[in-house]
Amino acid sequence: MPSVRSGTAPVLALVAAWLLLASAIGPVALGSDSATAAPESGDDPIVVDADLPTDGPTVEAVVRLEEADIPAEIGADETEQRLETHAESTQEPLLEYARGSDGLQVEETFWLTNAVLLEVDTDAVDYEAFDRFGAVEAVHENVEVSVPERPDRVNATASGAAALAGSERRTTTGLAQVNATDVWDAYDTRGEGVRVAVLDTGVDTGHPDIDLATDDPSDPTYPGGWAEFDATGGRVPGSTPHDTGTHGTHVSGTVAGGATTGTAIGVAPEAELLHGLVLTDTNGSFAQVVAGMEWAVRQDADAISLSLGATGKHAPFIDPVRNARDSGAVVVGATGNDGPETSGSPGNVYETISVGAVDRNGAVPSFSSGQRIDRTEWTAAPPDWTAPPSYVVPDVVAPGVAVTSAAPGGGYRSMPGTSMAAPHVSGTAALLLSIEPNATPDEITTAVTETARMPAAGIVAGDTTTADGTATLETRYGHGIVDAKAAADALVAARRSSDDAVAGNASDSDPREGARSPSSPVFVAGVLVAVSLTLAVLARYRIGRR
Image (cartoon, rainbow, N blue to C red; front, side, top):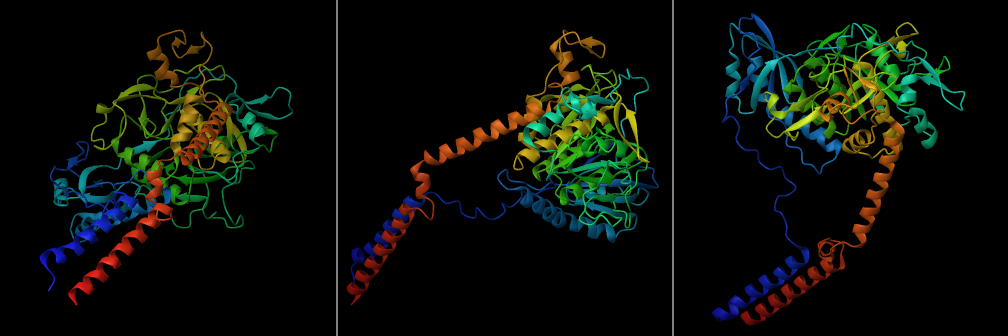
């Protein structure tokens, strides 16, 4: 029988062998590919919106559940999948309860933000009843949204057709002001390969300057390019493209309209246009907008254009916007038309590229909203929201006075508003993504904001001038007037620099990191040594036992 020492030696040798292997591999995080168990929820009482009626008899209430944990390193497709899977699993107990309870009716479920829209009979059910579900965090009303109220009086500086110097091409003044055609010429693109979803009042696809993205133009429902949603967020079956007002057609024309009259109206005329009807005439709901955003993400929209909102700071819009961005979409929103020291959601959500208006001279009209926002002003904001303690909206300004674009019936119309400014920025984002298809929403935002220009000193900006204080300027202009060409140049330069840095880091990388790769010579050698030592020790151990 082997001695104690001879029995211990093989064990120690095996340990040494595998420690040698571990030193080649490096530290390993056990279970790193599995989801981390979420902490128990339900310790804190749910937040019930004080504006929710309690004297019904029935109320549309949005029940919000805990959001999915999205790691920063995962891609857009996996983000979308995680959002859907998480919503499905956490909502099931609530849905089962609602379907079996008198006084509750399930209207719609959502995954872009983890929420369920219920019709609640307030005589039969208290909102606090939802506190029994650990994943439920808040209950709020189905917030009404609308087209920003149109300014009554505006300095209607003409913004129709403008001839470009040295060229026979004609565009609206808005396109010239954001330097869209300079991008067309310099980069030989007009938005090809990029999808922009406009969520608005609908669109007249009979207009000669407007086409929706579709693989089958003969199909009147335009699969992939059109969807209509009712007030509860349900998709309307069999709906065909139409505009319930004039707003949606006008906005769509500025994003991607053509030039059949000889005058170009769209910033990115070759972009693929999607349109989701989420407003009827001028009004819609939180559920409609979120449903439209979900549809846009599912349709692989690269940018989502929102010329709509609710005045004030409405925290329910935070999660849909940031989840859409995490899913790869640039979100652009109008700040509103209520003037200085005001703004509307979702345009004032930090992750939105918020857009105010300027006239053709670069002056901010009095109606254009803008303000400095303190994070504490967002009641019931998500605790993990990464917005800074204080920030300014708008991020940028764009043409929004007497903007000429398409109108239902095949004509054209001049309209004012931050609603008209936002699609200039959505179209700019489309141009940038056509040039750099792999650019992230953060990269697009940085390129657009950091290259925006301020007008010359002395230009009237509402009731002030650019010679006035910085605080006034920043809340009226943000970073300044969008310049598509400057943004494109900056984006291309930044990505080229990033690519060079990655190549340099690869050549100068830490050799210890390479050693941890399963394909590296060091890794392979470590495995072979460990296996050889193990076999040798076992062989000697067997001989010793004989």
